[in-house]
Image 1 (cartoon, helix red, strand yellow):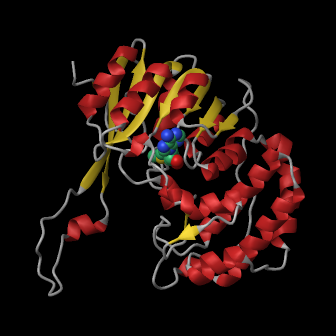
Image 2 (tube, rainbow, N blue to C red):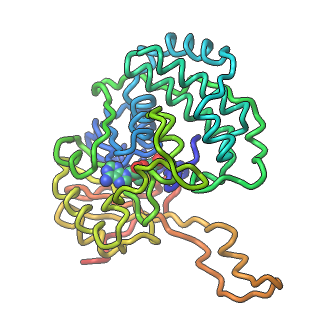
Length: 356
Ligand SMILES: C[S@@+](CC[C@H](N)C(=O)[O-])C[C@H]1O[C@@H](n2cnc3c(N)ncnc32)[C@H](O)[C@@H]1O
């Protein structure tokens, strides 16, 4: 499972259970799909999904894991994966940039990644098959990287997993749901909200200033394969200097999310947000209130160990206060009349909106 900031891996059973409880929910839009794991899990439960994310690597994951149907691509993808795994390593610009100048991968693995990527690029494949293979490439590269899960830095000493041999595997694909074909999109959420519609809208926007393109610039380059101009020790793409998404800006997220909520043509909305984000629970409830009955589920998670240890000076004396020990993931469920949300896996019992 690819490492990703704000990924809903732990909350997947609860989120899919909530969607299943919404009456006649046969289709869903996932507007900020990221790793595509929510969209993939919904497809696995027979929901027709439109998955969208503005980053190219995320659109590729959505095309490879959600749009591509198991019955259509399994055999061909398996043949290709065997062929790619048998290629000799090929060290070129990617290996030099990301394994020698920066150290995201061991050079021998970077050269294997590079050989596979070149072969895919040269083959001019059907875009869905290409997305399945690129998804396989991203997942396999993530298994041998040398980071803590973001690409703003690499580890000083090689991560133990970086010594494993890079090997591609077939991603988990689902059959096409009876409700119809799924699709992947690469639009800005504000545009996607105006043109995509479904029974349920799932919104999992960024909730703070951490920009995804910058944190996953190597994935963006691996998918685009465009030999970009780069800068800094970690060789970020030049386009990482571009403007941040309005969802990453404290002063803009409220307006942007309100617009998305107003535009989206869906009977029900499910919205993920953290209590550490730019918007408070009450602000979100007020934004969602015009769309129906708002119910809120919460899941508390322990924070990273540094928060518990506190801040120490070089002599080992405690100098700062201990930070928050947990963060709370909130799931806002908005339906015309409210639904039963008892015993949703991974979440505490739902409470009604507190803003009324
Ligand atoms: C919290 S993550 C989503 C995580 C996802 N639910 C998962 O489980 O992997 C937010 C996503 O929003 C995307 N994003 C940020 N700004 C966007 C915009 N303006 N339009 C579309 N996607 C955007 C980011 O690329 C990122 O993948």
